[in-house]
Image (cartoon, rainbow, N blue to C red; front, side, top):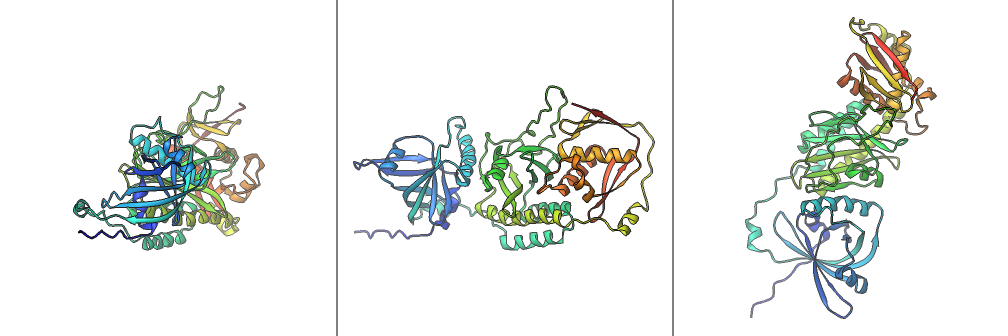
Length: 457
């Protein structure tokens, strides 16, 4: 008689690569009368070392069995080495809101689209299960022949280098570039962007990007829209490892000016046309979300839970830096102002720039081409009007005291708005320039004649 093979028990951490949704799990339940039922399940979501969440999509036999008998068994497969694991679970509750639910909803969109069923799958809830036991099943010969996955970098070393770059940054722009440098140079992430949350409009606007044909600086996404908006709204990372149609971004979200303003105010979103992997991580500081760090790839399964953990740690530092950059500002000293005004640019001759400002939403058009709107647009219009009177030197403090700009009383993100304006001008209208001249000080220059036109509506 052949001796029975031993089935070693393992911890749930070893199973995490199986929970990426690449291969559907198989779930076995039992009715109250003892009748068994086996079904495929779309998603097994890692919650913590003792719990997983399963997607509740249909009120089917599996659901009925769980409500009658909370014990179940789930079979999952590691796509990297073809090792099977058996999870013994006990159903606890169903959640239909919150971070776990929202993260599963976004990831389910990717799985559903990958299977060609994006219009059929709809997450009704996240079933939370306690993990009673995990078994690693005997390994088949096939798994031994599979090539090993590509080596991962030392994430702790990557975090250390990224932290060093951030600590050396002396401006918000430098901090953003330091973060993107870490992603590109240490993690080989080719496509990434940073968005800042405007709490007053509940929208996120792009302030930095890497790897795209256009920077997309100034493009906007509504809170709760797609993986980026959901990550910000629910304050939780959202990771998709497969091609998704429900969360594609092919252009910036529309912000209509209304019937009175037929001009297009979209800034093209810089995202990939067909991303296969996406990861959005909220940037937090003092318990609130200040923005989102977003990465994507044209390849499947590019971002693991380890990448997610690293980006959460790096994003936490970047979120704190964004706040510190705001709080650390101080007015320029007299010496700094004199040094900044010692040499100015000559005003070039040529046709005048026609700058039109709409008061209703502070949108600004230059030679009939849309440039910026909102608080950044109001700041530009204020600078232009002062420039017409011969002024070129400004401080962040005076902008904060200018009530016409309608800056929020808390977390105004003025430094981020000035950076956004600086980069939009550099890309779209280099004749107008913002140049930082010191701590809390900057110079605004118009290298040519400018004509201003104020529109009431």
